[in-house]
Image (cartoon, rainbow, N blue to C red):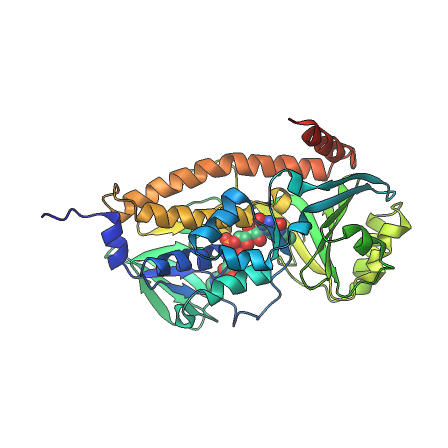
Length: 391
Ligand SMILES: Cc1cc2nc3c(=O)[nH]c(=O)nc-3n(C[C@H](O)[C@H](O)[C@H](O)COP(=O)(O)OP(=O)(O)OC[C@H]3O[C@@H](n4cnc5c(N)ncnc54)[C@H](O)[C@@H]3O)c2cc1C
């Protein structure tokens, strides 16, 4: 019997390099590993615990949960997940409760800490599959249709297929699109209450879930983590600070407290007490997004997933869900029998991903407008009231 060439055969033959060991990169590696392949994951971090992994993520049924089922990790996820994390308390800037909802009444979207999710994915792979401390500096096409991946330590890796999951500052993105993520106009200043007691007003109202205190064009957002700490974000509309990078820690916490007291002047002292309760560092998180509608350039033997492809602010809670769904859809498309070549399969996957992201990014932008509104907490309260009335 004659064997026709297919994308699946090509993918089996290609040496695959995955850039980045975040949720998207680890998921794609796990799914390829389940199909008997051995991709190489290049991750900049020195090791799994090299840096704090950030807050808690809620996983949607048609996003993260579906991906965990496909990866054969759903039972492990359920042991770690926190359904109570779906409770949300909405206050105005006078600390008056506007809404107290259990979002589980809508869709089941349990929370998991980002660090726990990453560890679950890392442990599902053979240890030698991830090369730690491998910071990609450039990706260059070679004359024979492959790619050379250059690393900060001066070494190079060649690949027949590059799957770029290296997040917001993707080194591979310029090969695929001229667009860059744009600053959204909104910055989060993050701090943690590492071991809050019952005297903490913010921790008490965060409960096992989320507190949103919302005023005129600003908000204090708090979220419970699995280790009982509370992660707090001060969300403000402000200019970008070109002297800092996303995630940078401020060296002068007293100056940050002073600045935030000024910015949030007039807010309830109960809420502002959290400024003195934050017992770790403050960090800078300006929020960026790619355009909702993207046209990608002609490219071969390479694709982008997750934040590398479509980073967006976190207002819809969809970033990690879309990243995990991308991984599932890419691998399923690569192995679908109807695609003759790798590039055909990649083009089909990318079209579907970019189409799916249009609505997700527009909805996220609308959620951001609702959260940081000149009308304070009212638009968000109306949104929850309308959702409660919906049949
Ligand atoms: C403050 C905040 C809160 C959020 N909350 C939520 C939420 O509640 N729900 C939700 O769904 N999403 C949330 N997100 C978004 C979510 O975290 C991301 O969408 C998701 O992590 C994307 O996964 P990724 O693997 O594509 O990218 P990333 O998580 O960014 O992972 C990229 C990986 O690549 C590595 N890397 C980067 N550059 C290089 C390089 N040059 N060489 C090698 N490796 C490299 C990084 O170290 C990292 O491990 C939030 C984001 C922020 C900023």
